[in-house]
Image 1 (spheres, one colour):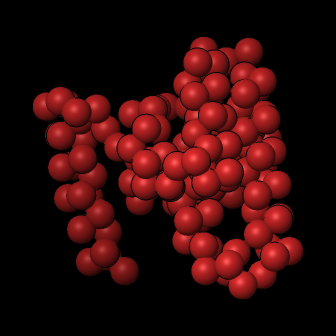
Image 2: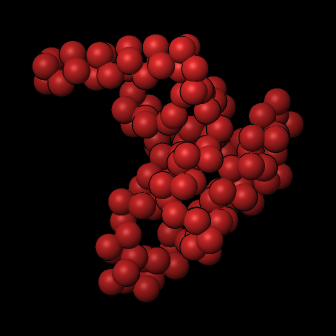
Length: 128
């Protein structure tokens, strides 16, 4: 079992609330655990971002909507059990970690993390 079990149960509830439209993705992101180091929670966060980005596709394609809803429910079930997400899911989202908009704690340390991340992203854009 994980040291992150409480946060995983929280995220499972957040994912389910989004899936049944009890809360918006934006509200879910604001309620998400801050500064998490749990790769399962980071991957689930990216799945949530992807879910929101495909809102227009879900509205047009019932089969795609069902697949995404099932995927979100699968993630919620795994996290609710306290287990790690499958490694292939975690690996699929790692390419997005540098640009993760996961919120930091609302204090000076959190501000500095956000500030330095924004500085680093600016330099990376120039490198490409």
